[in-house]
Image (cartoon, rainbow, N blue to C red):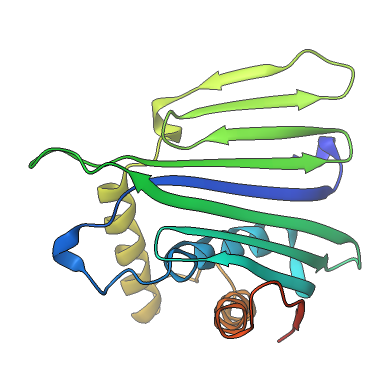
Length: 193
């Protein structure tokens, strides 16, 4: 990625199956359910130190939109946008739902687009032909991901591994989502650890 220059912006988009009615009350805010993951990813990818402007513009059980202006370790601004919906009709009993995640990262010299459900990535470099990559290993498998994350967490607790995300990054993302959820919609806030 370094050949593309520094990161200018990161955009996350999700489109999920409606929440299971049997779990009513568990999913009161898609922003709380999803955006912490997006913030963690942005902080890790762009080395974001703090967010000087952040706003949650839509927060509902089935939709959210968040806009943030982060500052990286070198003092450069990084735009972070995340939005999503949980509006796809539920599948028939016994079938899995749809959980489509896409990520776009803009750099000084190009961009990368990732479709996590399809396992595809497109790399655009300024002045060059785009590169299309399709690898099933890029596709998100939630069962494997959940197992791997919990295994890694246990290894960290036992002192057998180092966390993949720093304590500061984890604290920043947790603070960000709590602060954004508590602020009135469209209110710009500053988030620092």
